[in-house]
Each structure stands twice: as structure tokens, then as C-alpha cells.
Length: 148
Image (cartoon, rainbow, N blue to C red; front, side, top):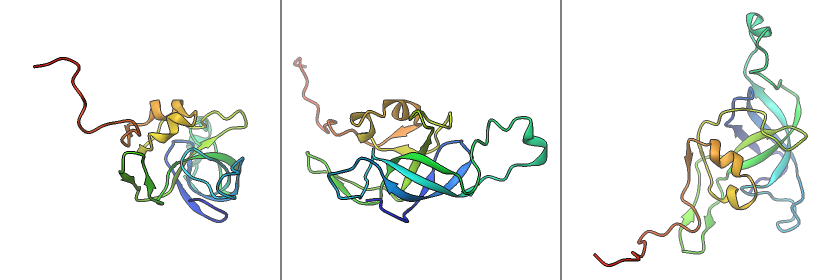
């Protein structure tokens, strides 16, 4: 659960490393607490330094310290119970930064994201992720449709 003043790691290549949540958007269910797939407003607390020679290619580093941006939560430390009985929990809280059109600022992701993002309309993030946690509808013992 992500709320006011929660810190999250940024897993895209937008230039931000650490953000702090200042608001959870459009979440009437959990009274201002956000989970995986929820959109938040955050402040960049730590960003990659911009070297003087890299000013010409500054498209790589799109954010600076103190910028206010939107982000979507992709990992959460709070355990989530799935309908099949499994409990999914991540080691840290993580987010991906967005622009005003709700598109990703970065072009690459580094790290695992939750499969619940696909069901909340963030399929683009899931498709760019190098690894996705097990899906909600994934079963351990698939039923074979044809006999041996």
C-alpha cells in the first residue's frame, strides 16, 4: 500500500532513481492508499547526474530532482492474496514515470513487474518488462485437453 510520503524506486530509464508519493489518483476503494496498477503523483527525490558532455543527448535523462510527475505503481511490498490462494509480495516498492498523456517517459524497464498491471490497463508496461511475476490466472497443474 502506497500513501503520502511513501518512497518508491524508479525502474525505467527516465533518469529518476527515487520518488516520493504526494497523492494517489482516482482510488476510491482504499481511501487514498494505492496498490499495483494505481496512478500516483510523485516528486523526484534522487535522479541520475547529468554530465556536461551529455547535454547534446539529454533525451536520455528526462527528469531532474524536484520535478513533479505522474507514475504508476508496478511493485508493492504489501502482500496480495490471489484468488487461487497464493500470496504475492515484492521486496520493494517501485514505479514507472508517466507524462501528461499517461505514456511512459522511459523506453526500457529494469526489473520485475506484477502481472496485475495487464488487468488494470497497463499492458504496455508488462510488454516492456524483462520479467513478469506469475499471473493471476496461471495454474500450477494445467489440465491436458487430450489423453497421453
